[in-house]
Image 1 (cartoon, rainbow, N blue to C red):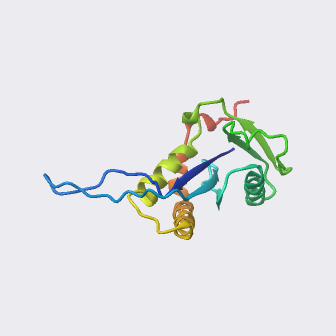
Image 2 (image 1 turned 180 degrees about the vertical axis):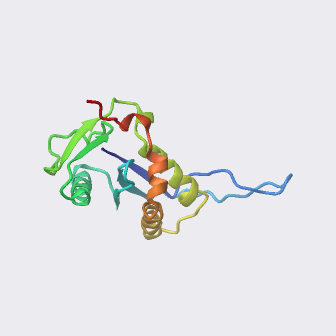
Length: 171
């Protein structure tokens, strides 16, 4: 069982808490440019395996590429892929690999998708309180953030763990 979602980040990024001396006011630069990058991510909470792409846009073609990457990562295994109901997720034009079965989570329920916690982690630890010079720097930062995250399977498992996917066999 894998979970999938996308995250947008850009020059008008996330501002998070920072440490400062008592009584001192912290300064954080804020950008007004409008370049964005999207990270497509999928993860298996039980194994920590992931598949991801950093893309300049979100549409059916980008989703097709991501599904292909997930299918390649899974190899001979069959993947039950849970994801939200974004338009590019439920399109009949999607090219779904033979080793993937898609199941959509209920609409407007991001709390059911543990990938949202991965995005929160990336924003807080890798992509916040920063100024990005241009699109290329956004792309490089997105790739670096994703590679940092996926290099740690135990972190993926802890971020994406949900009790209800651990089924015991009862005979």
